[in-house]
Image (cartoon, rainbow, N blue to C red; front, side):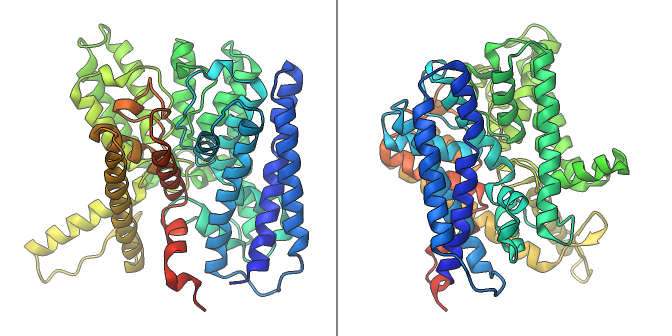
Length: 483
């Protein structure tokens, strides 16, 4: 492990985090709120510390980055970004507890959207914009951003990309990883601009449009309103945000291919995308018929609210237009199931990912088929291609680790005095990077009531979920540190 090289790259990441505070600083200047000084101080600390690490551990060896260094850089980079991102809230006193500041910051960077804030609208505008910016940066990944705008990171980029991009097999669009990162960010920025303009056309001001677009495209869910998207009570906003949540939940390489002129059929030809859309459609219909007549008199009104909530949960965005805890048990159960599934591989969504779920289902069917036909030679295919055994090994390992972390963390939270429903819901909402859950962390509640130790546990769950578990948990394996 080349620690000089690792800290050198982490320094570059911290510089990019510090520079990204400029947008929030601009809004703070415009509104003349109390966020100016804490943002300036935090920016100075981030850039100063980053430059110190970058130049202090400069001239790294020219050998290519290995997988250990890639994972270490990603894990340490995200932890450092989470702490630096907490400084504006803490220095300004907007969030008095340092634990709560870190919780809010990590929740932003991991695109979880779990919040401890009870009065969001009273926060300075500059700090609210920074809070939403953490979503947007974390959505496509701080590491991928660094690869796109900091070409001096150079060699070994694929190791960072593999550790950063959500999904079992990252798609490489270009031979050079920097070019791949740039293409992904161009698509990401394009969608951000389009959604912002659409929200502006609907009457939302620039500040709220940007903040909610950042939360949508990153599938994060931080809102500038106490009651989230429900505060606007607008069919137009609901439809626009629902569409872009679903777009953000789809593999971004498909968006790139479609924009390159390969037609919209590229989405239908992708088996994971079909599975994702099928899940959304089926769960929306079941939920709609469950609440129609029970909670909503009109079918279209029921469809409006259920489609938004299903899209919000399956993409792990976490926005809310209704309190789904008031719905019947069936739609609540359906939403809880979707918390585990998540979006597509290569999207900004969290969860287990549709790709893994689909492959596990195909593998299970193959085993049933072998029981009926013991001598048959079968292979699992996806999109007409045979899935290699090592992919199944990776998926099985990930699923078992996900389940193990979920059960252990839920029991730990329950041992701290949190009721069992809230414990299970809070953990799956954090490890799946969703935000709202059930019980005391439902769509109209927040995480302020969770014990302090429980918040640190959930911070770890957020990092584990955003970095696909392996990247963080491998740091605790002794063999990782041995030569």
